[in-house]
Image 1: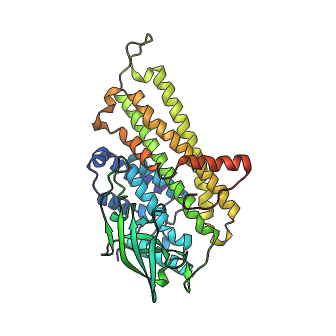
Image 2: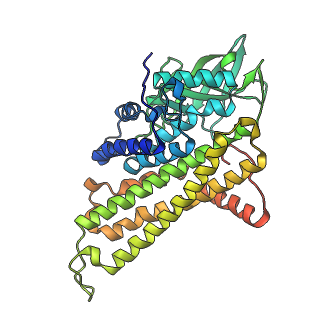
Image 3: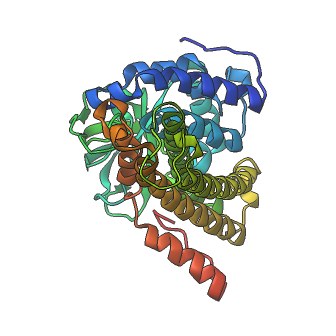
Length: 401
């Protein structure tokens, strides 16, 4: 057992640590994106910085931090590398999965395991695929099936599985070691963006789990709480924060390029000595920065709201409170996506033709955000907010709401 111990830090200190990690990732972000290699070294960097155990209990060497901090840390990492920001954000959700659905005893065991060992999580829980099938064999359950996405699992220590127990409608979550014969990662993730997330397909064959480790089950029966349904707004806000980080990184990179390399246009009739004096460049950057600040404010508001209930006693959450948070998350997500995609496109107008050279990698921000924001149609998020504003309707919990 290898325990990563660090003194208890404030939220500000954790954000500072995340910025240090981001600075290291930024050095070769363009080259790593092109190489598209499995990010084992990048995950180790997260581990070495203590970020993996940010939410873990202090008594086991964890950071004991809130989700509000975890969201901001995810965002900081994504400013430099959207893929690694996604991996870290997903890890936080899967590390919290036990708290979402498991019994108190299971929660304690999982949190001690991953925090003491500095373990990294992945997940094979893509709702758009058929569920894994689960058969019961005495005191064990056995998972089989295929998932077309398994973000982070290939570079993880632990993988979250989900399936349906045969002859029932019972969904069962379990946490298993990633490195085992029954889990085969197919190394087939080769999309235009988020290239280092290892989100390829996986085949699960006869992966055995003790019934005692089936999350939330007591005597083979699940005991539901409204709190269980926070998994979706929690991860949707993970999305929103690494989208926001990508957008921030795009704008910052473009600002630096314009300051250092963009040339003034000499044929406009109001010629300037420097591109930084060009009125249209100042106008556009002002527009994009204002929109980004607004999106960040809404995202932070949602982060504070959901963090408060994620850390409150699980039995206290009401359906109404959960619905209010889901609407706020939906509003933040749509704003960040639209602003981020606009930034990813318009920065080329402000940096100039030479900035389109592949060595600068300015296209990676748009590619990253465009790729993952297709995860679920943003139109449905707008509809959820519209139904709330016009009709006072709260969204019903689903795999995407």
